[in-house]
Structures are given as C-alpha cells and as structure tokens.
Image (cartoon, rainbow, N blue to C red; front, top):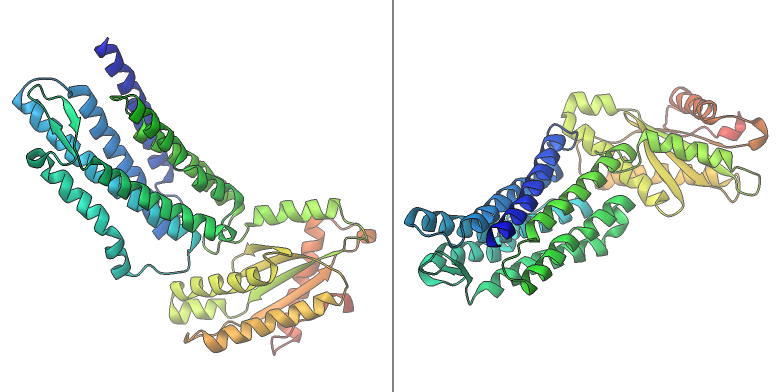
Length: 388
C-alpha cells in the first residue's frame, strides 16, 4: 500500500518537472528573458525545479534504512527547506518588479528583506544536529521539528507581502497578469492544507508548478497585447481596438486618434547609447499613460512612435489635449536631469463615420499629419487635423 502511495506521489512530481522544464525552455530566449523581470521568473522556475526534485527524493527514500540514504535524506531536506524560503522571497521580488517596473530595487533594502530567508537556511542546515526543522528517526523516517512553523511563517510573510503589492498597484498591471499573480498562491495553498490534514501527502510544490505555468501563459498573452519595454499596448492591440471603435462609431460617441513621435530618438541613441533611447521611450510612454489611463487607450505604434485613442466631448478637445502633452514633455525635460531632451511631433484627427475610412486608412491620414508636423512646425508644435 505504501509503495502505491509513493508511486502516485512521484507521478505528481514527474508531471511538475515536465511542466517546469517546458516553461523554462519556452521562456529562454524570449524578449523579456534578459530583463530583471525575466531573470526573476527564471529563478522562480529553477528553484521550483530543484525543490520538486528534493521533495521527490525525500518521499522516495523516506523510511529506508542505510547510512548513504540517511545522508541523502539530510541533504534533500536541508535543500528543500532552504529553497522554500528562497522561492517565496523570489516571488515577492518578482511581484515587486512587475507592479513597479520603473522603480529600482536598492541593494541594502533587498539584503534586509532576505534576512528571514537566510535565517531559515541556517536553521535548516542545523536541523540534522538540532532537529529544529526536521529529524530522522533510526529507520530514516522523516519527522517535523518544533521550529517548523517558523519556516511556514516566513514563507507566508513573503507571499502575503507580494500580494499586498499586487493589490495596491493593480492599476499598473494588465488584467491577465493581475489575475495570474492573484492565483499564484492558490494551488500551493490548497496543497499545503491537504498536506497538513493528511500527513505524508506532498502537494505544495507541484501546486507551485501549476501557478508558474499560469503566470507563463499570462506572460505570453502580455507579449501579444503589451509592448514589453514600455508596458503600453502593442501594435496588434492598437489595430484591434481601432477597428472595434470604428465598427461602433457614430456621432454620439466621437473619438480621435493621436500619434506622437520622438524626433530626436536616433540622436539620443547615437550620442548617449541605447539605454538612454529606451529611457526616452519609457518616459514618453509614462507621460501618455498619465493622460489616458482612465479615458483612453495608449499603444506603441512602432519604433519611437506612440498612438492614443481618445473619447471626445468636443472637437476642440484635440487642441487642448495636444497642448497638454507638449507641456508635459517640456516639464519632463526640465526635471529629468538627463543630458538629453525629448523632442516630439504630434498628429491627430477625429474619426468621422460619414467618410467611411477603415483602420489602415485612418492611421495613414493621421500619420501624414504627423509627418507634416515635423516639416511645417520646426518649434515642435502640432498641426491640427481638422484644419486639413
């Protein structure tokens, strides 16, 4: 009977390892793999792979006599307890990177946050001599130690803090990513409850593997609908949203399309490096999101161009909106402290249903107005579309 139970448990771990291996292979070489976010996610996958192996070894050899087995079980349990706290810490850091992508992580703060995890590693390493987290009896059977709740408490502290960040800054997340992050702790939490009620059943880390698969699927969806560098919507999303608005357009619900281009983007790249060019793109995306997060739709149109779809109350809204964008860019230039400035051209047009333009035709019209602004407006002012 015991052998059947072990085989069933190993089946679960084999499934988890296959899932994690597939996710690891798929994420390697992706556009975000070299970013801080990508590295944090890769660490989560690697740690989960290792802890699933450690848990599987513990179940496979638990209660089998012999000194070599005893050493193997000590190593697997030390490794497993150490990784548990590390995984939960990585989850907290990953959640922070996702919800606050433009806020750098200070090393001294990170070291303080890691202290509880380091304490767990020390207590785990001492457990073969003290029995604090676990012990093995004469037949090499595993038993929980009196300080086991400390490991659980530290793990839940990291996870709960990550959840608090996600909920507090949910406006920074796409709907798909928000849901995936919310569900992260659910499968392992259910596995933990089952594991607590039925001693010997191990489902926490297979549950975590399912959670990482869900986050990976959300990430893949984000790569389609979001620009990975700036966080705004992608060109694919822009085409879909523009056609959707055109299909439902009428005089009662007018909207406008705005295009914004960084005129000196190549100069920033050539003189100050690509990192500065990326910073310029992220800064302009942030300015536009500040204007349109609640009343419009912002996307990266391509290269150094951005687009916004905005609901209109009056055709004169276009004039004031473009003025506000230009002023916001000027304010950013004054306060940024960068050795370069962002210079922009702007083009905009209201959609007029009677003209019957499709999405590509409407984009082409506004793109021409943007090009005209570059030539006719040397002081980087815009050309109003309705004066065409």
